[in-house]
Length: 56
Image 1 (cartoon, rainbow, N blue to C red):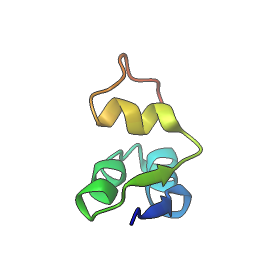
Image 2 (image 1 turned 180 degrees about the horizontal axis):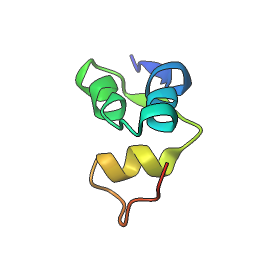
Image 3 (image 1 turned 180 degrees about the vertical axis):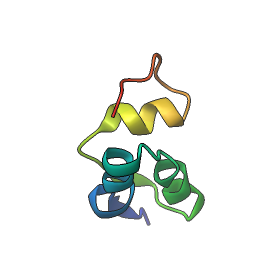
Image 4 (image 1 turned 120 degrees about the vertical axis):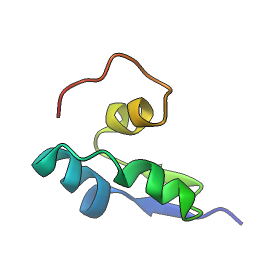
C-alpha cells in the first residue's frame, strides 16, 4: 500500500513562514510515499533532486 499526504499544513507553511525546509524529508522518514505540496521545488531541493534553491 502507498501512503499519500498533503504537505501544506506542515512542510509548506514552515517553509513559507520560517524558511524551514526540514518538514519535507521528515515526511518521507515517517513513511510517506507520495507528498502533495504547493511548492514542489522546495521539496525537490531539500531532497537533493533540484538546484539551485528557489527562495521561499
